[in-house]
Amino acid sequence: MIPAAKPLIGDEERAAVDRVLRSGMIAGGPEVAAFESEFAAELVDRRPCVAVNSGTAGSHLGLLAAGVGPGDEVIVPSFTFAATANSVALTGATPVFVDIEAEHFCLDPRAVEAAVTRRTKGVMPVHLYGHPADMTALGDLAARHGLAIYEDAAQAHGAAWQGRPVGTFGQFAMFSLYPTKNMTSGEGGMVSCADDELARQVRLLRNQGMERRYENEVVGFNARMTDVHAAIGREQLKKLPGWTARRQANAAFLDAHLRGVVVPPVAPGATHVYHQYTIRVVGHDRDAFAAELAARGVGSGVYYPIPNHRLPSLAAFAPGLDLPVTEQAAAEALSLPVHPALTEADLEQIATVVNDVAGAGS
Image (cartoon, rainbow, N blue to C red; front, top):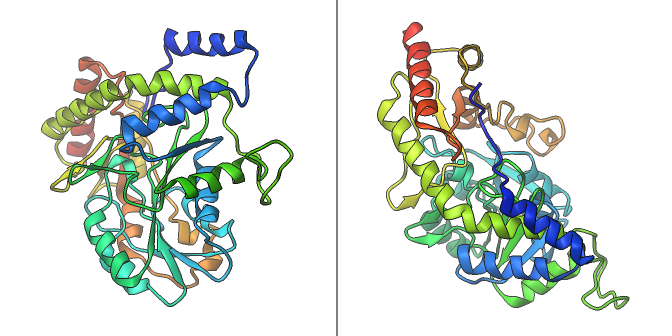
């Protein structure tokens, strides 16, 4: 079976973990600070970065640091992982779900504009599957209405819009470092902040409200990243450019060889980093299509079969809401393997099997 995703952990990561364990400084040591600095320099134009223990924690703390809370609304897509809306709801604010645009699975700026109210505090675009949202249109919209932008860049390490890295557009941005992401720290997240004061607030919130021991300034959380995780992340960061190039090359091969399915287009000026290579299965039952791929040795992933606005946990925020483009994506989207571990033979097998299955039902 060719797996849909495959974390790549090498000797360098193992040696880094061993180095930290030998040091005896497992939490709160120098690795976290070094990882934050290196991540900032490599990916977000040296914006101040704060490492946390998960991507969801990063979004939650970022929103709290940005002043989001009860009475506020934050506009979010419904076609994404529930953590996006969860992080808004956990602040006491209201997630407002709107539709995506059909081609790139990202927020539709027209739908965002239609949802703005006097309570709207900000907009949280998701750079889904590694493709950046239209930050030109969303930035213009936010400026017109006096709104903040909070980026969910969980899947978009190294992606860019018109040459500008994702994670540099918003008041803050969150990157996930979960094992299946384009790079990992084992588990964790990184918050890229627009200024030093916001970064300080995130640091306070991640560490029980303290910068100095026992001098608690605010009510905070324990959302710290350990030095063990940071050491893994530092090694992964070194490998990320090569892995990204490999993902892009794999995607180009699939673009050129797949037939009978809709391959993912890339918007002009967008740099797609292909966390997922997500096709649309049209004219077939998507789930049956995926099952047949698996029977022939090709893994795949269905993200996200139930839109957020219909989840039991979040439906109360969206009674009677109709998001037709989201619903269509939820029924048609299927992610194929694109990870850097794929061989030429793997890619040829994926193309052959997908084309055979697509052709069988035509």
